[in-house]
Length: 523
Image (tube, rainbow, N blue to C red):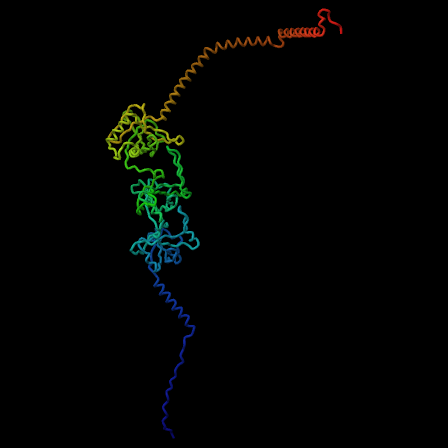
């Protein structure tokens, strides 16, 4: 019998699965992922702009290795090096740190730091171990830039170097080069940072940099000159030797001086970028400046060998000017060449030493009257030798009382001042006179010798022949085997015997005086 009793409802049992806790195995990867994300976010935040540098070559540069440094601090890394589209240079891409993006302005400069040997010294030796790197000198511009043309040589000065820059104008560069020292009182206070030819090609402009605080000693009236290692000059004044330092012996250099004011007074400093004249030597730089000069031409009919441009024009020991030009002058009348010497006279040098003259500058009319009167009294220009060893000559102005009459030639051009033949030419004339006289004397002597040979010598020969005969006869008479000699010897023997007998008689009479009366006694 079926059991129709309904079964009780099943009770719902809720089973809770066990809770799984993370194990240590998963913590490490999670930390690595978090760290990677953090580093990535930090790199993105620190990552600055990318710049492109253009260099002539990529010597020593390597991608992902070469660093960009400022004050020896890494601020970027080279990421790529490629050739430029025209293959004339290389393009270096550098990823710069975000903290250094403020340095990337238009006038910023970049260069490759590698070992270099220049006249200024040796630099970049540390890169022999660490490898080359790129350096930056931040500019002062307010405009950002991302493309730059790198420097092939390190800049002579950087933007953080304190000091002032000046320009010197010179006729020639001399022995100067970039890095050559600048001296003040024989102390190196700066350096040459560049030079360039003047636009008209008549000179050279030299850029120098004087470090602070020495730049305050450069005043508007400072004098600059070439300070080569050994400055040897041989001119009409003698031999001059000047030397700055051993370094300048090899590199050359520039020196300057400033006028001294009252004790404790500091002269005003010259503004930066001021222009000065670079003189060839210290003596030229220290000369008193002449505000005006007058040109005259001197015509010499003699050699001007030894006379150079710049030679002094001397008036009784005072340098009154200098030679400015030497040229040939052709005389249409005589069809002969002369030497035209142009000189510059500085009236101030003479007027400063003149008594009874006012401070007013004399007019052209006054100068003409004075020169006309001086020339009438024998005022002339003459070439003289100032140094016998070097042969250097100079122009001397003096009075010559016995000079031939002459006058100034005031033409439309440069006035001509009369000249006097030089002492060297006078000596040459005297030597020529002496040589002519000596030649005439030699000619007379030759005639005299010819006459003696033609007239006197034959008579003298006869006399000598007679004398020779007499001498031969005397020799025959005086010969040892001559009869006369034998007779003389016999006579001399007889005389000797007689003398012996007389001596014996005298001895006998001395012993026996009575023998003269009684005769000799027998012994």
